[in-house]
Image 1 (cartoon, one colour):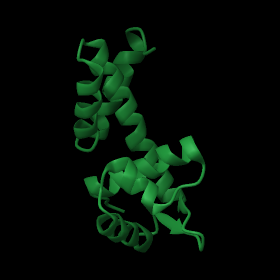
Image 2 (cartoon, one colour):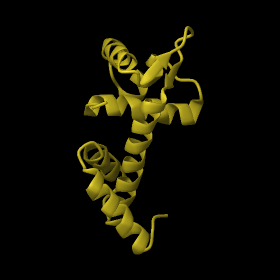
Image 3 (cartoon, one colour):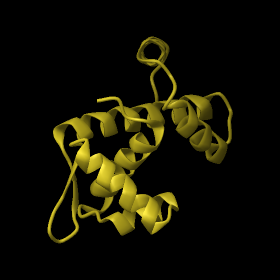
Image 4 (cartoon, helix red, strand yellow):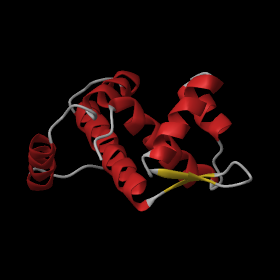
Length: 125
């Protein structure tokens, strides 16, 4: 399924919050991303319709296998790109913000070459 940048951001947020807290609700995603309740509600509906998340009776959000794969991909990109930018001397706050922008647009080919370069030339801390 082709997911737009905003969908990727929601999936990544659910992934991060699940790792941190275990249980995730829409309100947690809204707080994490700084989005309004109506925006989050609409997005959760679209992600559910796209079979990327499930919503339990208690409001708990869960990533489906497809949603998990997308979230992990975006999270890896965010992590690696943030680290690369910081190693180049970019201040952490700026590196994290810029990585968030880049992670959605970088091609799979370019990202894999960046990872290969890192592996060949010293890795990441």
